[in-house]
Length: 425
Image 1: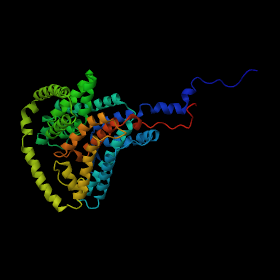
Image 2: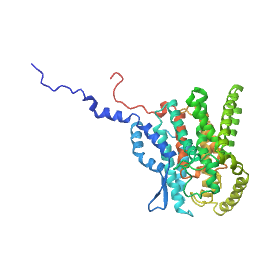
Image 3: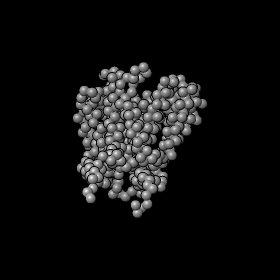
Image 4: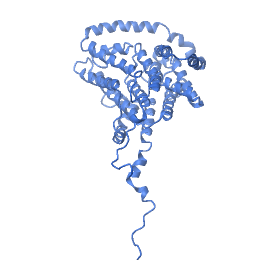
């Protein structure tokens, strides 16, 4: 007897909703991460009606990508967060919100709270979007980030329209010239801001290039290291040299490995010197920008800082308020008082110690390499206030999240999907 049941349509399996969901999931976290990196390096600012303040494209990206992050968390679970970073984020947010009660400038303290929320979101996004990637894929994203960081600074030096210093800076002033003397970023900020991000990325990229010896890896690592030198950020460069010297001395590194480091540094120094010589503004004004006048000015700021701390020693002046003393740890005392500021500073240092302690969920050798940049950045905080920037602090947290995601073992980064079926099924 003939069978009159309808034949299965050849396209019916492709119309399966579950199949479409899995297809849509492929590449979604990686695309979201690329969009986040693009918005971070092209963080064009625009005024916000009614608030009298400006926002950036990075702020918008953090808001737009929140539903994507929720979808990723629902599929893979919450990412694993190291305890020092969790405590630091909660301290920033809790003390900042509490200081709204006594702050001398509630508007600045409110901005600090919003920036703290953005920092935690950027950290969580990096942990979640990168948790499926292996080391080679992670390095490719980090290389893209370096190119996106360095290219706008080169376009600024070349005078390309749209890549000039911020509009609020008076043309031909000292601040305006500093963008052209030292490699800076038209959106992230002047050279010290760019150096803070490159400081975190140079150790893993250089180590990866020395291991693979591939042309692209070597070129990107050379670019990152040369760009770091061209920022002429004395605090960042000195901090990196100190950390590398301590690392080579304490790790009992062989002479061959020490020679590899110096052999790597030689072409970088030559390339940086050539680039500085080709830029007429750098060639003519670099001595003025590196004079001891800036150091004397920072000493004077610290003298005035002590007067403010003595007057507000218990609770501080409030988050995001007070003078810029070019010292991240001193800035915490000014904002939150002796007790709260010391707590934040100690937690900051704890985040650096975490990279050199063993943990069952991390890869120890790779973790120590990544920790070199983190330790150098924390050391540079003693002479820089980069951590207080409204845009730069979330970007630092973003790179911290990237580094943590790479140091975490694959089994801890990706949660295995639950299934009620037996293995035989």
